[in-house]
Image 1 (cartoon, rainbow, N blue to C red):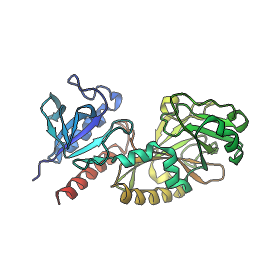
Image 2: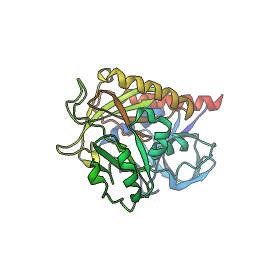
Image 3: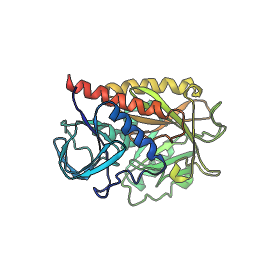
Image 4: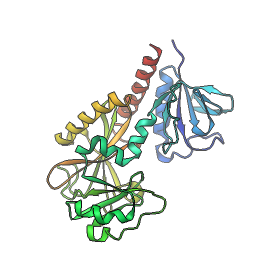
Length: 318
């Protein structure tokens, strides 16, 4: 039997003996993932991208065994990395010495909302590229909805976003930390989703091995349009059987496309249903937020991740 070495990589510094100390309430879920990987007979490591030297070699690591971590500076060569680092500076481009979950090209697709629109725009609200504030005067008249959404093309957690009437958007000032923006037609989700939620929403579907493995709905605070947890939104697990068939159809089409085009990535899609009943994808997320321990689909999600790793490792071996 091949003794594969797999690692979960983060962006944090290599220090201390508690590499998952930053995880918080979802720590037991991460530990369960590591235990499931150990049951496959794999050596399991928690890693930081800051010690990556190339060719699959990490100069520092925390080995996980028997429920404990052992910190070491001895180099280790990893066969597969489950990448939980933020941004698109990692993994290195064209590095085929390791199996990456997810590959850099997929991370870039999720990070660059304009690139995503150019690939799957038929499923998204109509979107325009805004290179500078002065371009808004020409772009806003092309928006067919009364309200508009302005957001950084590479933003996260709802920061730097404007949602409101087009006349107010004309005076919107870009946040300095974001170089470019996109403008999207506003999807009024206030009519809710039958059997799921009565009002404003953001429905997230997690996809692993080209199938939906976990879903939840995020609802903004009263008076807000931001459903992100960082903006005060609340999250509730959703049984996928309750998800409208119109969304399931899109999930199936996207999943098949990404399975082939991006080496079977693990990701999620955010949906909203407008008053016209037509679902739209708001964005792609290459970093799936893990479910909480008590959520019903926890082990379904985790076991599909492990199966994803196993498929890739066996393909490489063969």
